[in-house]
Length: 244
Image (cartoon, rainbow, N blue to C red):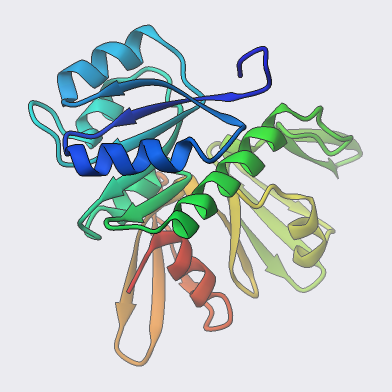
């Protein structure tokens, strides 16, 4: 973030009308500052590798290199809003923890929704962590307090008044109800998909629809876990993943 309390924005867009529209929208937001533009994939990769930006508007279909290929080559990912005329890349965008996925043509209202999502994430990350922390989930286990980094937690499963925490290395059983755990977790990292399951979104590989209205979330953990998606929670999951 710049010293004048504005956030730097980088636009990656090969189409002039789309670039001009983004610039026009950006100029209406005093907290945003246009810091650069790239019109092709190679130029975007070079600038993103050299410079740090708070937010990047990334087109997917670009000359020389796609937006997805650019992100796969970056060591550190900025906050990303994908902009594209196609809705077939929503799951791929989700893998990069994109702030939002804008389908062209998009209105200023829709643009502003993306900005508000970004601001909430960015300002939340900059806030000092509360006792429960912004880095991990803390709990008492076998007489001692344990803190699990969020990135190591794959999902939670409830069993009545107990909950099992499935992590990349082991499982923990704790006497905390799932509804109480949900209150302590960052909503930009975890999502409740069932009355018995809360999942770390980075581990969702794909969600498939089966006859009868049932959705199943397939995870990319070592166990290749699959979890049911409850009808009550399906609408939010579909919205986040941009599922039809």
